[in-house]
Length: 80
Image (cartoon, rainbow, N blue to C red; front, side, top):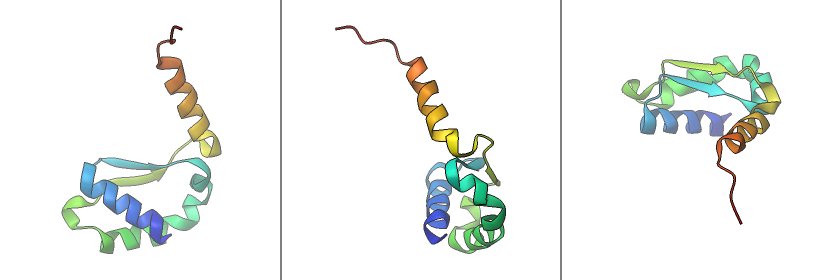
């Protein structure tokens, strides 16, 4: 949990995103992790760096595989 909070806080500090999506296998546990994670995030990050929204993704454990496939589909075919 601590690593998740620190990662979200760092991303909010560095990139100031409007939304953070928790994806992959951890998204299934998000309902249980959400209250403690958001409370810890409030104390870990500066108020100006807090993300407006942290939510679970909709692709579940397949998010990484789907993202990689979409990225691969967009890369031009390499020629030998």
